Image 1 (tube, helix red, strand yellow):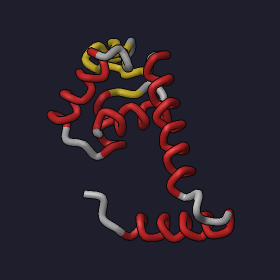
Image 2 (cartoon, rainbow, N blue to C red):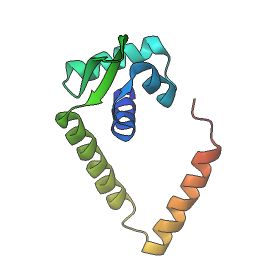
Image 3 (spheres, one colour):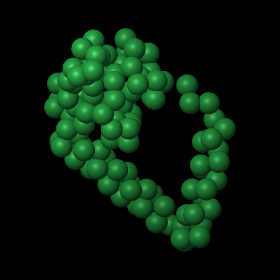
Image 4 (tube, rainbow, N blue to C red):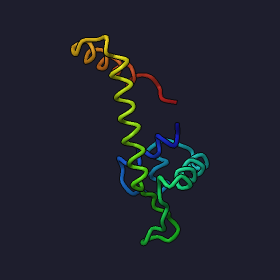
Length: 109
């Protein structure tokens, strides 16, 4: 799950340092290191040295990484469509609006 969270965040953020990614997804640095290593090992993300500060690493999503995120989004939409097919368009909108409101008040830890 954390690999998907980190990869999706990188798609949204663009190239960032590992520390910036960690802050964006609220993941402990030692846990993030393992997540990023998995993404790099699977060739979904590249890790390069920051040209302005050789101590920092810049993370970037590869073409394969972008394809994985798109495929996951497509599968998620298909699953939602199948799950909600019993509802009218108006009922779907109301249901999703209510879920969004609940999600905003539920702690995410």
